[in-house]
Length: 224
Image (tube, rainbow, N blue to C red):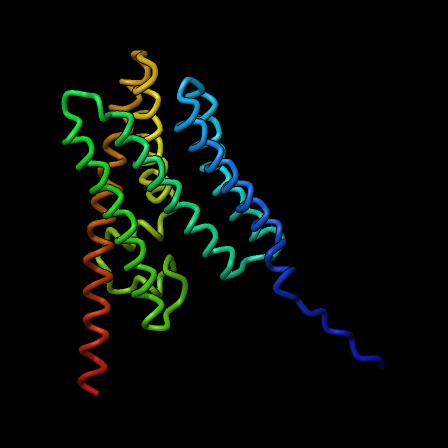
């Protein structure tokens, strides 16, 4: 009986996985939105649509990865970098949008603080699971022993979605309010801010839990 030929996968194949193609499209949408926000501020609605489209694409690349059995470390990297850069870029733009307001300095400090917290908490979470050779940074095994908010955040999809969607749409709403005044935007902001605040609390806990996990790992190695 003839032995079945094993199909090999090349780096090019991985780069062209369907979820990764969606990821590249997300990058283009994000960059396009930033170009519109910076160079064509009067096209704020188009910029908003592009940014939101990139954000929604995050849902579809994960679905595609599971549906086509095309999960990859590269895809995870692309997804995480796109998420973090998109959020940081929008927060940076918001600091400029509110530069001419009465509380410009406070807004600038707020947006800078959110950028620093976002990138540091996610990087430390990723590093802490990597240095200890654990599974994916969102898995139950990787977050065992972490503070309950971190475990809930990655375990319960609805809580994860509530925090992420609430935070991103808080920033999107703030961007829209800088260009258009409408009562429904203010109402939306009041609904979204609690979710955004919860996300920042999770980020703080994630940062401290990850740092403690790495320090505990160092102590364990020293005591061997």
